[in-house]
Image (tube, chains in turn cyan, yellow, orange):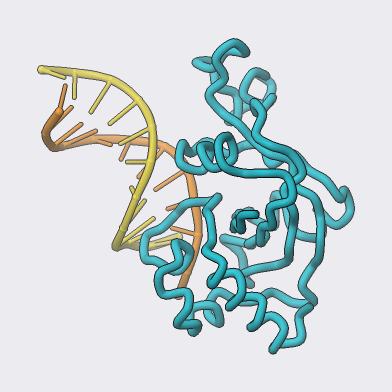
Length: 157
DNA sequence: GCCAACGTTGGC
DNA sequence: GCCAACGTTGGC
């Protein structure tokens, strides 16, 4: 089992949106590194934090599980999907992949990035490294555990 | 809204 | 294959 962190801007998709729909195709990722993780590495049952970016309360909002292995993102084939449409991608040779994610738990409040940065265990985590913009990233077990421990300490679980 | 850091594109 | 220009991400 692997651990992940996946970013979303809550104005487009938040933990509360996921709580309502329960399961959601994680479409729209247009970054090769992030795609590779979803296409090649994610397994059903993996756990992932949902991270709210570009918002007032930046940080981890809750927990999801991976509900499918990677499959082609259908929005890339649909000209009506605007920015997500990729005319260079074909159904025979899709460029972009996604996974389905399943709601597990919403934290009672956001575990703030500023608090995460105080954890020495996260010094070598992609999330807290300067300039890292990856929206889908793997976490080491020690990263996951340190974050969960802090969430518990703060009574967010 | 600003801007640093990063990724992608395309001319050469 | 290099690299300048451009577009995007995302914290502040």
